Amino acid sequence: MHAMQYELSLPADYDMGVVRARVARVGRLLDDWEGLGLKAYLIRERGAHGSPVNQYAPFYLWNTVYGMNRFLWGGAFQGLVNDFGRPAVRRWTGLAYAEGTGAHAAFAVRRRQPVPEGIELSALAEDAVAEAERLAGEDGAVLAATAVDPHRWELVHFSLWEHATAKADGDVFEVLHVSAPGRDGLPRGRQW
Image (tube, rainbow, N blue to C red; front, side, top):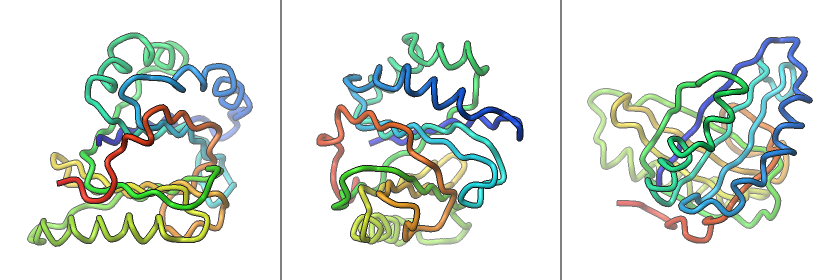
């Protein structure tokens, strides 16, 4: 599994209805994308759920590098670039994935944290697996994933929730749509 996200921070007075309309128009285009585990179309609105910014920040879990590369280089990503400019795309290697019992994702929580120097990496990875399993076991959790960027030495914890009272720390996003053609194929549990 590979995780990926880009963030488009928008002006404080930006009409987020523009993003909502765009997702309503194009969101289903990835509902059958080969190699995609899931894409959560996420927004944060300034003042809502503690957000200091307006932001469009889709989060992806990929089953294959081929699918991810085809998205980035095969033309699909170009539409976003044409509309908003080219954002930096962050990528992480999967450590853990767990399914929850929630059915419909309305909110997402994403927490990024640095991996400190001198820490035992295997212990950190085991803790990351335990955190994904803990989050997925909480009431209202749809799923949880943890991944790492070994270039920046950064962990990302990502979870989808049925409600805004998620039992996870981090930035809270509203979920506008979820494309999940390969969700069933995402490897469960520990990924090493």
